[in-house]
Length: 450
Image (tube, rainbow, N blue to C red; front, top):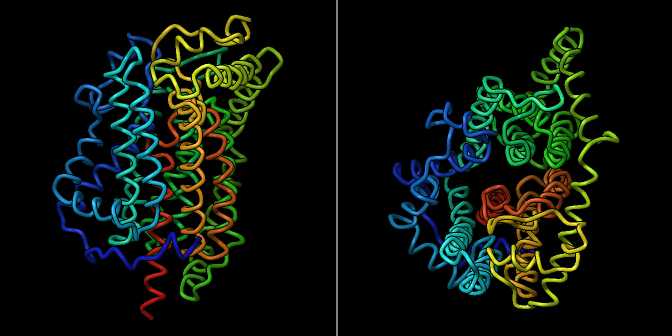
């Protein structure tokens, strides 16, 4: 399987991208990450005070980052993508093909859905993500850590914007402030903690290390106040990734081990001193009280978490009923009517649905309801292939260290797939999997030429 995923022979790419190409894909990845962490206003009054740069920039439903990536495809990527999809020879190609098949099937099933035009946009977004997979592999091969750097600093910029406006316009629930947007920004910040550890390990720049540490501390704080259990879980595993990198990791390359030892001698004492100083400050006591209040609200006996878990469980039952009645699927916007017709919905044990934008709050269930049994097969296959590309790429690029980092991030992605719908129609998994695959491909080419 490793040889199949990483065999570079059929595809040749330029050693370096042009300046304009780097600008296009760098800006596209950067802003795609920014969008994930932007604040979500909790009222129309609050939305009015957000400036343009704290809101998603789009033309209709087409986001700015999608326009940038489409521009790259028109100017540079079309011949490359045609070769990839027709001949293969690049990591993630198999996942990209299955993702395109998922887009086609769910798109066809959505033609008769209530919001067929809106569903067409969802189909096109999946096609764009399918094209993004081999594109990011190519960019990583050409420019090393540049794609991951732009992604992390996009998350960082969005997180800073979110935190600024969260404190300016605080969302107070049960006398405790929460991050604006909660789940989506919290999940993105949790994943960004992992990616920061990846880049810290890969980079040899001390300045970049400083920026990565600052970004990671920002992600950690934002994730902690996000009130998102998914974000807390992903972020907690991300901090374990950092602990592994700082105290345990042993890269297989001698130069990389020497570099990591130097970084540890600088950063471990600094971080330990910082933690000790913070622990003895009033700010830490206040922060811990804040975190404790959020945890009690989320998991306490009077919290809404139990109801939320029952709602999520009802979606599994409801989608099962939908598959039995409509094995070919009901399209994206067909979920509302189909769910309302299920026995679990009429029993009163499911969450009430009012809009055709409703979804079952799970990527696996989302595409199963939209595409039926074929959609369920496609989404599971795509997820497995993406995770395998990430696993192989991290192993080839980082050795045993890569295996450990994969083991820490994989449970987070599985939970994300089970609880939110944007697993494969956004950058949250697509880009990190492609970056890891690009590292592995570069290492394999280097070994083949030495």
